Image 1: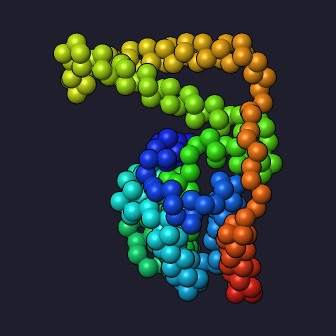
Image 2 (image 1 turned 180 degrees about the vertical axis):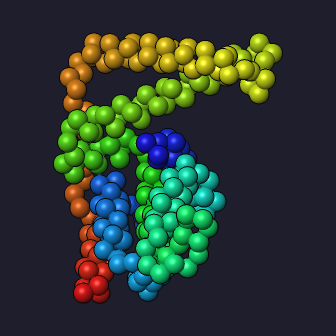
Length: 255
């Protein structure tokens, strides 16, 4: 859900001639899973491994040609969630107390765990943000089904993307109607906004019903039609092998 706005803009943000773009969507998904797995294996306070992962992520950003501005602009949704999780760990009070404000206190172990968790979350989010910025939504859905994701989950994800786009379109139409009648959104009261949200829901629901009937009339049975994926290529095997080696090396370093 957090990455839906990014997915809708993925095809217009990055060039298509990079080595990363030659990877199939299923390979990019597997790379993302391996990346997160490697990060979860890093123990708290092992700053050397965090520095290594940061350097690798910088190399990936360089290869994909995704600018830092594009990534930062689409991290606004995740920042409040990350901040909430990090603060809940920071004020846990584990270890020797370093700072205290009334009943709030920061321990040395809590500080180490907080910094480690923050690095894991940021590095994970940045890698998956690269995936969503460089991969169109429906090839990503097809990759999920190819990798054996449950059919129900794939269908829900596909419908979520489709109906989110419809909801945005209906909202833009209502906004244009408000401006055409000489009203400014900043001058509307909360009651008017509540009525507008109700109308938006009814319009979106009605349009969704019409789309559902049209899909059933065309023979849709609940199973998405997926294009045949290409066989594994050498560059994809190299990418997966490199990340698998990174995860294995991480697991060996912590022993």
